[in-house]
Length: 271
Image 1 (cartoon, rainbow, N blue to C red):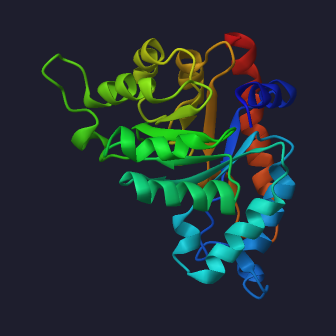
Image 2: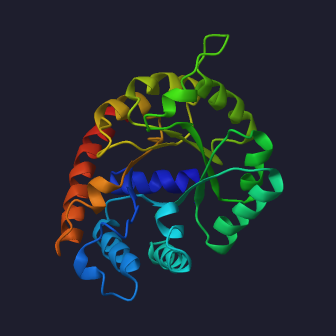
Image 3: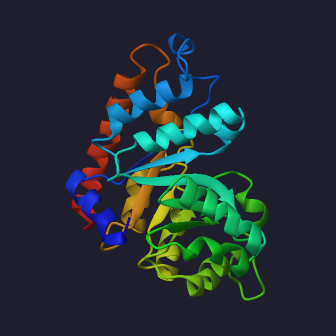
């Protein structure tokens, strides 16, 4: 999916919502556990309920690979079920020496046909470039994450006064264009978005940390939007586990629609 195609979806739906299919087998409604594939049965209903109001789905690979071969099967069926107009993210956080990264890229871009994958930048350019060899596919580089431990390294001050995450953003821009690379910038650091946009004026940003982690949508949108919106704001638990009863899909739909109504206002104010 191209940058312009993604922006077209945002304009048509008046939404920049990414729904995280972080499907924990321990949390799905009990009545689904008798299904042949409970995870896919859950995901299918969530997708049916939210596809009209989101522009992306993010599948956290840990929830699938942690249960072995059946989990990978659920993952592949879920990916195949997502409408082709919706952007797909393999939240796999890969990144290794070049030949290993090339195999990870093959796994997620050729064998499973995701639109994008999250990649850790710690090992540098040669660990990222193999993912950039696929036309129409995206690297989503970890920039400033939403977890508490992001303070340990990402917010370290360098000798020139910049934070380490700023150096990552500046250096990695030389590896790819804004049509190939996005960045993870957590909503739990809303005050940082002004600085991020000074460094990355044109890139899309994947924004976790909204909803259950307490990120503020209005502040992130005001400081983080660019002329093509440039944001994919993710909500996982706050949508998919809003109910654990038989009404889980309807409740998820209502939660997603509530977020999108707020997004419509933010789009009108900022674009």
